[in-house]
Length: 315
Image 1 (cartoon, one colour):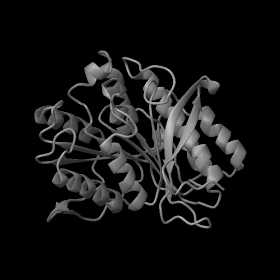
Image 2 (cartoon, one colour):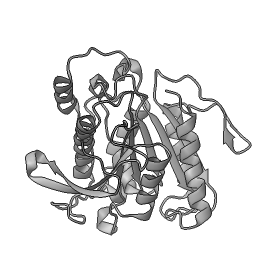
Image 3 (cartoon, one colour):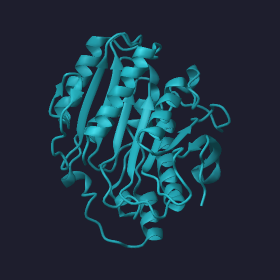
């Protein structure tokens, strides 16, 4: 049974083996050969044409946090044309979104093979900068929760760091509406529209895995995702998105999905609300932080935002 106590480079085959993406997989340091992993996180990097890669400092920082605090297997990957990944980057982000969707499906499949005894596993979809744009289009179909490892698991959790709300037009070659609609669809998902992840029929692991692959939609968003928790973290000194744009963006997101948290008090977070029937949206503004979180204080506050949100969720 494979275990990756140190970052291990593994190729991911996409498009029926026509494209290979470079990925780095790591399991929690405390994981023993006999223990089960608590879940899986997949993280996308910033815009590849501007130097973004799986080795980006914020991507690796978030990966370390999810490894040590959440005890998740973490997968970072290079998009097309970056590092050792094949192909070339797109101008609209469409291939990056479709690839991310397929990477998630492949990683879920590998996780189930590597951790047959894991139960109620947590799934985290994350991205930084342009990677958060692509992450917001990923759809987790209800069939994932037919797999024994995820059956009875908590809602998928999305972590969007420095979402490029002010420059989506540039990163998507003027196809902003595609991403706006995708995020709105994710945030407006309910049990009625997305399916109940907690009530499934046991149809066997192989059959369920096949159903995951078949039902996983492209970023065109034909299928409604299961209800999810979404966290957005950004700084008020972001070089690419002004605070006014972020205020407008978070207001729009909040109108589509409530916060799962009752209140913030004394810099902390109170108990979670019961929100199993729908998606939720929570955002954290880090004062003094820019797009790159270049100070130790900004990184500490980033950690605090992610950890408090993650730990406060109960579903």
